[in-house]
Image (cartoon, rainbow, N blue to C red; front, side, top):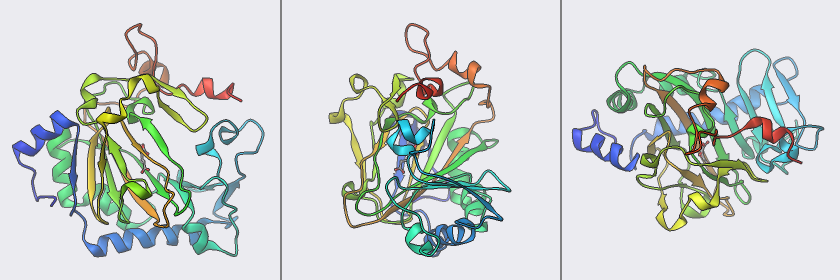
Length: 298
Ligand SMILES: O=C(O)CCC(=O)C(=O)O
């Protein structure tokens, strides 16, 4: 159960393991409202030319999706905010099937201010605020909102990675993610897997595979992985350096989750060049996700 205030032992466990999981954190009402929000936003934005730009699937010239499986689905971009969402690769989005489309979303991004429930969960939920304040300091700030939803029977995997291999910040000891299950998340439908304590080894080498930007296989021992199964409303708090992955969803059970990231006051967003000089391996070379390499990958 997510407490009103985490105690010192909990925080020590977070520092040691790099994560804390709470099976019971959100109320059933919060889960229902947050889940319905996905359908609401899809109904509002998808194929609404006044509000939304539609960017085709991954077969378009020079696209991210052409090189990377996880970039393949059609993208819907709000014309008035940073909000955008992408359908699962291979799913054909249709204007006359919006509820079906909502069940086939792969990714929501920058959605925290699109509905009051997301604003509340991301920024004002008292227990989540207390938890984040305890691990990042009371003056922590929001960094991003991103959610991966895994449609039943084919939601793609998100391979092993550290979130800080993607995020351009000036230091790596003050970023945390909150991952909230909206559906029951189990191994069969692609729940989170983590390497306990794996954040303490610091940055690991990532490279672009055909699927996504991921930690090189030599740097991960799958035997160390732990599956974090959670009921709807369960929450995982995890360190920005914690290696984690979610397998593909081959099951008939949809698996949607919200995710918000935060940074401590001392952790500043910096230009990518500056960050790349810090997220380095022993040779001093950048080992995070290098988008310039993606452009040449065919
Ligand atoms: O929710 C998921 O499937 C994985 C989320 C994740 O690891 C990420 O977005 O970095």
